[in-house]
Image (cartoon, rainbow, N blue to C red; front, side):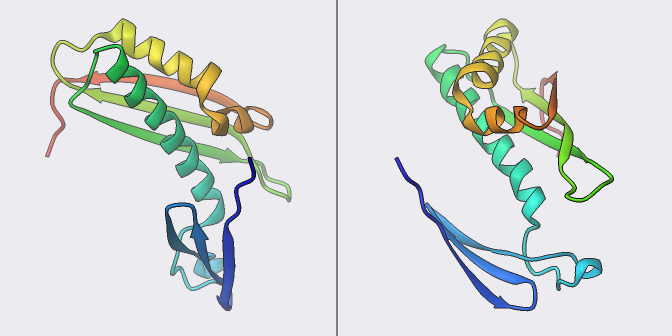
Length: 142
């Protein structure tokens, strides 16, 4: 299966990405010659990773009848010093909210996402060391 997105240059460092399901702007930071009018390409990679694993986990927990009230995923990446700068270390912090959370099923869902279902994670594994952190909270603070 081939997937294609269309990206159009809008001047300076700004691009419009027309993707499967929506569109958005990509731009460089001001210190890199951009105007900061869109998301940064490398940050978008971390966003894709968090989204991919998050969708897997929510779907799996639903099937396991271990639903949660909420889920936050914080993805952070450490860039190499030399060009081309790539992420060589990535940390995924999963924060699950709810009462009577089924921790064994949550951990199994994370494992299945990481090892079997999340293609983005598999791609990241080719160039980065991935660490996961799991936290449990009763309520999300306002």
